Amino acid sequence: MKRKNVSETKQETSFELYWLPGESVAVLSNPAYELTSRQLAILERLEQNARVEVTDLSKILEVSEVTIRKDLQELEQLSLLKRVHGGAISTHRTKWNPSLENRLETQSDGKLAIARAALDLVRDGDTLILDAGTTTLALARHLRGRRRNLTVITNSLPVMAELSNSDYDLVTVGGTLRQHSLAMIGPLAVASLSKLHADVAFIGATAASLERGLCTPNILEAETKAAMVKAASERVALIDYSKMGQASLAPFASWTEIEALITDETLDHKMTAYLQNQHVKVIVAQREPAMKPLGSGTNE
Image 1 (cartoon, rainbow, N blue to C red):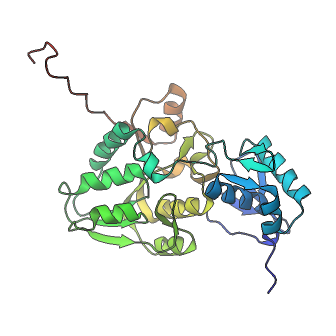
Image 2 (image 1 turned 180 degrees about the horizontal axis):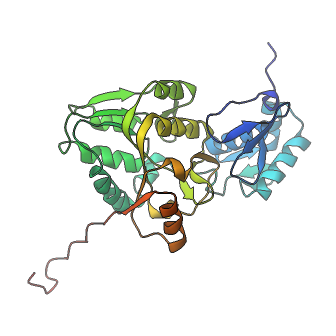
């Protein structure tokens, strides 16, 4: 059976990605650029391998090496990759984000503060959606013993493991496992979420900005996050300050779809004013003060 050329395959998505009739061109509604499905396939492969080769891409996508080089040149002009001899590497957070293991060690104090603040928005008896990510994992750890009679819907294997011996009702969505984040994503996950409803969804993001809203570097993950947003009555974004004002490949929610943002540092005036205008409640989580070392000369 002849394999389909990727550039001839149209992908359907549930977020801000549309296909022009008769064309293999993806148009992201907020971004100021257009990507072909072949270029999207290149970016997906680059995320998985950190480096791509022209010869390999030419064979996989069944196009000439000249065409692949042209694609790489256009993607480099968009700052989505960097061309090197024989191929390209990922150098921009628009497409690359650290692994789950690395993220557990990044901004850990801020994530703990965000989790503590998020706990205040959870009531006994709530049905919650917990997105995949280290901040939502921190929230899962704070829930145990502090809230009762919860139902937790999640696509995160670490969250499931964390709450597996709790007395909460746990619901996991199906889908394809993304090794990078240990999250279940894709059409099956979206279909599962479309049949569920939660009181509150706690959603993470790789990047967030005024222009593009909440973003992630993986298209299938963006579809899944968008389905989580639609499945909840209230949506709370858990985003540490380092990700604010950043951009990423795939937007999945606009600020008009978010009721509250919990972050760990005060935002600049422009972003604060914009979010207030969008009726987004901004909560700045307070980090716990560092303990003073013994013998510091204080009697307090």
